[in-house]
Amino acid sequence: MIALSDIQQTKQRFGIIGNTPGLLRAVSRALQIAPTDLSVLITGESGTGKEFFPQIIHMNSHRKHGRYIAVNCGAIPEGTIDSELFGHEKGSFTGALADRKGYFEEADGGTIFLDEVGELPLTTQARLLRVLESGEFIKVGSSKVQKTNVRIVAATNVNMIKAISEGKFREDLFYRLNTVPIELPPLRDRSEDILLLFRKFSNDFAEKYRMPAIQLTDDAKNMLLTYRWPGNIRQLKNVTEQISIFETSREVSANIIKSYLPSYNIERLPVVSNNSENNKEGFLFGNEREMLYQIIFEMRKEINELKGIVDNLNTTGNEHGLKVYTPENNTTITHTTVPAVKTFHIDKESSEDVHDESEFEETSLSLEDAEKEMIRKSLERNNGKRKKTAEELKISERTLYRKIKEYNLE
View 1 (cartoon, rainbow, N blue to C red):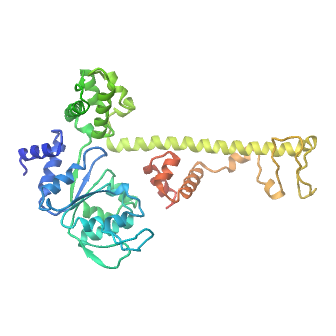
View 2: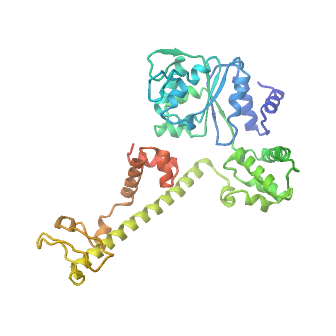
View 3: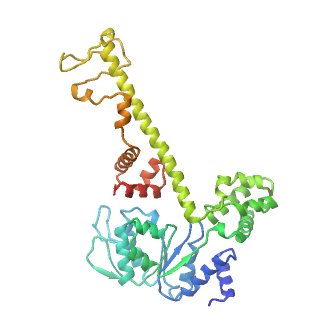
């Protein structure tokens, strides 16, 4: 059992603020497993301070004199991640002008922190699993097996169980990484720490910008405590800095705080994980449906306009000096007095595809078909890059993954 004095000393050393039981439990667990070589998986929402815990583990282990390397897996392009982690041989790919050591070779005898490990490609996950199982790896472009003695600490804000069920993360790798789990609570579950953190950040920025520290009124304190803080500690720090810079008065009220909190009335609502997730997905899907209805409406409008133009050509073409090509009269459209009308070539086969409005409504794409086609074309335009596709469609990546699986677009 770790003594409370050791926990407090560790918090002070690494600048960790708060006394919430969940936070103290996470620090205690990090100290307990530090002397071992067990793999650790740190989970928690973005902005909760996961990056401090690999350092706690490394600095309290027998590897503390070895190298500590932190790698943001989500920031490295998929095409180079294997080279970054495991190294490469000269000439193994375009641009490989010399041999290069990877992080696993450089950190031999030390610790590697794999942040955003849930973003690793499946091929890289297979390589990582081999390192965890046997300490072996192979450089890109090489056939020589190398050994490394590295302790792996990973972190993610992804729901790993869901990622496994969707085929985006290997189950065997998850259990290898998750030998010892450490979960960090979100800021909304650390209400007793919020004002402590605000005061700490306020004093830090007062010193940095050489101005008096921000003071909160009672209603401002209450607003900070009831806000949901979707960005967690990182968001609180950013808001504190903005207020410190832009507000001339050093006493801040609830109305001032509110102006720095986006979507206050929505974000402050209490959240239950499962239900809130469903509500969020439902909200996003509602936006998708509106977008698809708009696309179908525009398609229908364009077809009706085209139909009107064709009907007009067939009935009044002669009045405007126009002749419509058909197999029977073997004539061509000529353009004389109606410059806004473009030249058309209409034969029997294509004319059968022009229907009246009621026929179009019956045979138009269903909402699901239109959605599937829209996603497929967007994936093609973006060469299968799901992040870019999600941005183009203005939906979340999570929703896109679900739709790809639902419509079998893998």
